[in-house]
Length: 110
Image 1 (cartoon, rainbow, N blue to C red):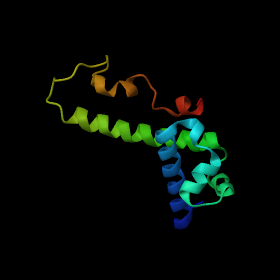
Image 2 (tube, helix red, strand yellow):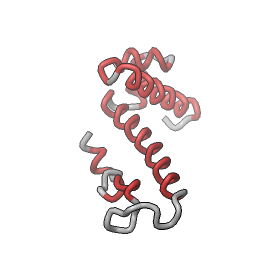
Image 3 (cartoon, one colour):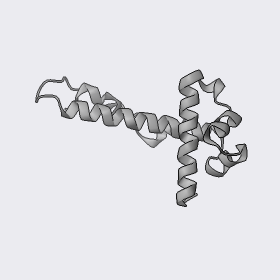
Image 4 (cartoon, helix red, strand yellow):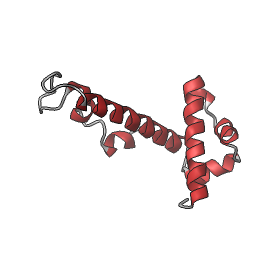
């Protein structure tokens, strides 16, 4: 979906899934519960995501992206030389990048 309405629906589905996962874990985030919370029919989820797992990967990416931005901002606000590094000059706070966890191959395995 590339329409404004389609993108808004996708965002509501992502937000609903994240809220349900935060409240009760994966088991509480059924397709029906996600759709209900997003205010759409259950089948609508499959117009935006190929599966529940696909939706959850996007939720995970979103959460990780937010956390990464927060870590980068925190690292950039440190005084020069205040943080240890992980071998390539990057601050330890950015260790996720040093380990390569932020690449597509990692997420493809989820």
